[in-house]
Length: 164
Image (cartoon, rainbow, N blue to C red; front, side, top):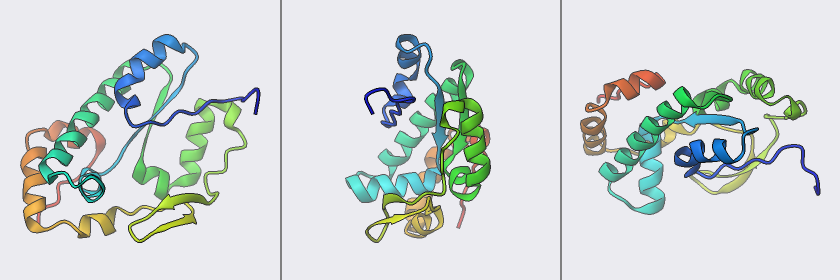
């Protein structure tokens, strides 16, 4: 509308722009999100055709920046992809507590999603298991070699190492 109540900007590079956005938009709020590193690495590789090492290193850098954002942004909440997809009602309540103007938020509403199979309209779904199943033992070994260097990041976000 001409006078929106809330402007939402969700570009992935905002992980790195958050402090600047806070400075220039002092009434801004942040929903900091993170997703399972194995699923993220698989998805980036599938879409961009980068090496799995590059994909997981990207996840690590972004996760470390999100940890900094959690420490420094005054009006922010953290929601994992897993919480959002598996606990939508409590996630919705946390978002509304942060931004009361979103009181009519309907997190169960169907959205257009590009799934592993095709584009369709559906509720938020956790695709981690399907994506992780696409990783080979060699992929897992490379991902773990990188994640083993930053166990504090895995612990911070509560993610488990996958050792098969």
